[in-house]
Length: 258
Image 1 (cartoon, rainbow, N blue to C red):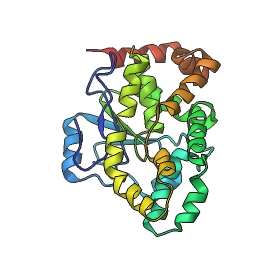
Image 2 (cartoon, rainbow, N blue to C red; image 1 turned 60 degrees about the horizontal axis):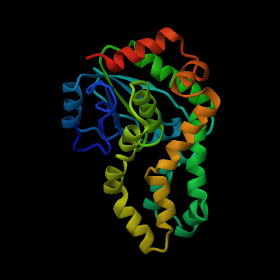
Image 3 (cartoon, rainbow, N blue to C red; image 1 turned 180 degrees about the vertical axis):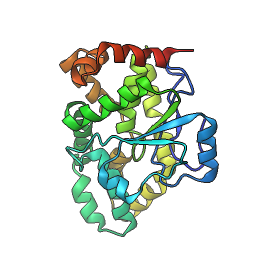
């Protein structure tokens, strides 16, 4: 299921035993058309979880039907300029004809990759990430309708949340990785012209692509952190996020229910 006007919207279900139609992942919903809003309502979406920073939301707030509940979980509040949160800023800088040299200086020489690896470590270690994901997963355990989880592009902060849910629903790492990398096709459609234009002006398009796309090593960074610190997803949810056994059990039951 895809929304015509929203990049990277897709069902997170059908991976492992996560049932389809329960959790959808998406880019921001700041330009939700009447057609897309109607489709979300038809899908039974009652809750939308926005994982963006306060600054990102201020520039492009979600536009939702009044029937939907918006829950803001700023998982990068403690590091609002972490790599994932800077994607929109880079797009805006380029659109506003900022110096290509200045953008190159900010992301070149391996800095883009470093920023993104740091982001994925932050998603596991920051107190704001613990609070945001604890609230998200706790809310999902109690929800009755379907939910949309999104950030700016729906690939990093959202990608981590979805990967955890899929792993909890018995998906293999290969299945989770395939779905995670599924963000690249819509991102290339959305940002391809920008990357080509940036390269034509002397920009380091390869470095910029590391901010715009997803790579297996990014997700592996977060997964390695929870394995080292918590022994895997159950320990991450329990010890790391502080979710009780009853909540984790209820969440898993919701994910697996027919």
